[in-house]
Amino acid sequence: MGGLNTLWLLTKRSITGALIGLTISDRYGSIGPIRDSSMHPTFSACDNMFSGLLKADIVLVEKFCLEKYKFSHGDVVIFKSPTNHRQTFAQRLIGLPGDWVQVPESREILKIPEGHCWVEGDNAACNFDSRSFGSIPLGLIQGRVTHVIWPPQRIRKVERKMVPGRVSPY
Amino acid sequence: MSFVRSRIAGLFSGGGGGGGRFRKIPWREIGSDALDRAALVLKAACFVHVVNNYVVGIAFVLGPSMLPTLNLTGDVVAVERITTRWGSLSVGDVVVLQSPENPRKTVTKRVLGLGGDAVTYLVDPAQGNAARTVVVPKGHVWVQGDNIYSSRDSREFGSVPYGLIQGRAFCKVWPPKAIGMIGEKL
Image (cartoon, rainbow over all chains, first blue to last red; front, side, top):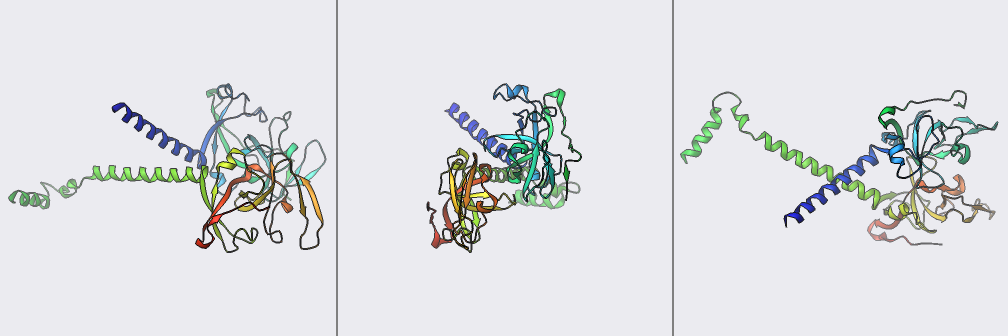
């Protein structure tokens, strides 16, 4: 009888913990590994599901920015892939609504529509980003990466980085 | 009786020194009680958040775009999140999604095509019946309001990524005379 009681208590505790954890990770901030290599010099990644947890960088993602969808140029954001909603990517925000962006590898200059943004990876070789799928709706963004928290030798703040000459606000 | 009187007298005389009356108040119990209550409220809030985001939530729908399925003056609908999370939406479902033009706005539309489907729509139903056919890209959906004359939907902003969909509206819960399931209309 005592064993059953302990088990019940343990279940209750873990369910409560899970509820609180989910709420915090949905509303305030979460941590997670980087799975794709599109941000190569900034984050190191490993796309294997299991060893990825050991080798890849684990980052801290804050979600307060989602309240007003206020972002700055150069922020690193997490977003759902526009072609597969189960996949998320971490890439750098290059252009915000209303900006004119010069598309690399072509002479085109595009205006970013209202409510959209232009994201690119830091790794020029890997180009599954706005260069292939175009600008994405801001609603796909899930949070802003603020810190790398694992492995210990790479712990640091993620800096905003602007690429000069790519974007003009008019 | 005399025992009680002496206790009361002790309370008022201060029990030997100033602040004695305050010392009698069980601060410790009050504090732990308040902490327990706060924890309960916190747990309840977390529970509500998780249920609202992962199982069933409610949404207030306003505007003319979904007439006649949803009312002009505003209906409260129940939105379930499971179908969307599993990726098993089908054509004809009414969904609540973040507007691709303004991420802080949510809109309610009907899914008319999933990734890979070809959708034919009238370009401007008020001005003749010029139709256009598009193929919805992979991972996207084509959404349209039921009231094609007054709806801002995929005909204007194109197909939307699946990731913007927040849930499937399956049931009207308010006002009372409109209570009922939202069916498929095709």
